[in-house]
Amino acid sequence: MGMMDIACVVVAVFVAVPGALSGLPQAKPSDDGNVCIQKQEDEFCFSYDRKNEEIGPFYWFKVRDTRKCFHGVNQSPIYVDTDKVRRSCGRTKLRYCPVGQVRGLFENDGYHPKLAGLDIGMAKLNGVPGFENENFELNSIHFHIGKEGKRRGSEHVIGRKRYDAEMHMVHVREGSEGSGEKAGLAVIAIFLSTTEGEHNSEVDAMLNKVHRIQEYTGGPLCEGEPESVCAHHTSGNGNCGGIPHVIRPEHLLSSQVTNRGFYYYYGSLTTPTLSESVLWQLIKKPIRISRAQLKAIQNTYTHFPGVLMKEFGNLRPLQDLNGRTIYANICGDENDD
Image 1 (cartoon, rainbow, N blue to C red):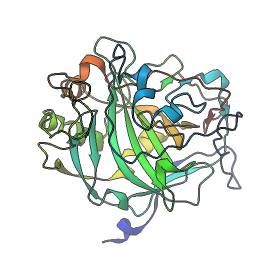
Image 2 (cartoon, rainbow, N blue to C red; image 1 turned 180 degrees about the vertical axis):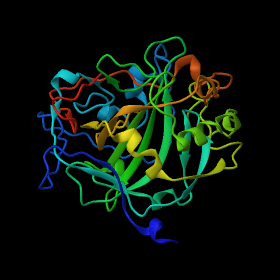
Image 3 (cartoon, one colour; image 1 turned 180 degrees about the horizontal axis):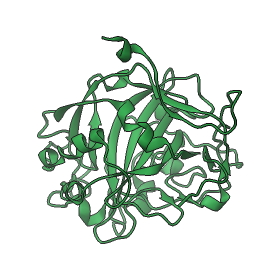
Image 4 (cartoon, rainbow, N blue to C red; image 1 turned 90 degrees about the vertical axis):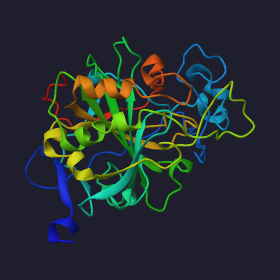
């Protein structure tokens, strides 16, 4: 391993005033004070069909281990009103250390294309606001899209902007219980657009493999739950685990992506158990993808036999902010549009 591979490389730097280093304020839960924690320890049977009154997103409180947090006050995703964001114009750094390639398995888990496993956890993120001196291990990367024909294609909504998809990079804070602990997770959300932004070679490399994992042929997983309700299957491409894929996480956070800053807030998982354990960072500038890449995700099969992802999408409905503050490392005179 060369020197470049063992050095920490800063992938985002924001400077307001030359001189002293100043951190960003830590994202806080709602003033209500109640933070609902429910560790996500297993795969769950749920649907994105909003008309499904058994396991659809408006009825996820019926899904195992999800009732506790369904009505929590720190839920995600949210609408970001850019006029009400609290900006901090100090210097901050988001970086991966060590720098270099990590390997994962790219698979269809029945809900979204997902990269996970192997040695992906060797990539460690630091510089998360309020936790600048702590490491967060990369756990997985997955993609969300909207229902075909609908304007909303991303889970989070930023002002008047609309995007075609949203990529989540999920990290677990070292030494924590992950989803089972307050601030146990840090998720970086990167918006994907077919009309704006610049292409990113790492995103392109993943999305150009989606056609190889569109089929979903795993075996039944949810014991004791009738397949007529949720025909969830084990993750992977035919129970074989997925397609090996190599990625350089720091390239997903290159300066061309992050030089416009990010919004951040305290929230939850957007899938069962909906645990309120997530430090969210929403990268402002989108990455461009092709319409063919978007269509490949849309034509990926879900865990319901014969149902493509485009039929219902995989977006959770927007949740109330409940008094939470949304922060940004965006200077006050910088345009949000």
